[in-house]
Image (cartoon, rainbow, N blue to C red; front, top):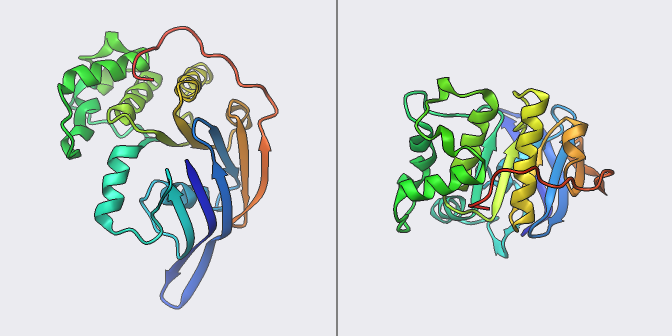
Length: 239
């Protein structure tokens, strides 16, 4: 699903250059759950932005689903983001004055494909995260875990093959965090690919594989020390 070869990224401010990624190389198989770990400033978020086609490397190659996006133009990158990638962040980024259903359907405004009935697609996405009973509720009426479920459903609305998540449990209590990881595990079991950035070892242990970044390089690449946990009962549908 993902092939990264010799990626470098340098931030420039005037004459000052700060290397962030220095020759990063790895692959992620389709249907794999991979966690990226590393200290603050190690390049985790920069790498995730490149994988999500939100940023460009200074050198190296990035292939997504067999297509080389290293030098792709903005239109091609935007189209691939919309069709192939779903994003989940630590902050939920929900519109406070929009219902859960409305928040989930927002990405459909930017798709060129015929989305069919947006309400039907949103309902399926809510089923996938076990939140069909909160369809008409607004973010202020939802718990943190429920808001993150809405954000995941929004990421699923365009049926992406790849989910990128940046500290998705960082603002949640332990129980809610486990439930969110259960959802990611179900998505992987159903064939989607998940790449998740975290600093939490307990979160990393729920993945199939752990990549460790240090000083802009991959300094560790190993299977998770804990076997993948089975999904808890509940969500089905758009997985």
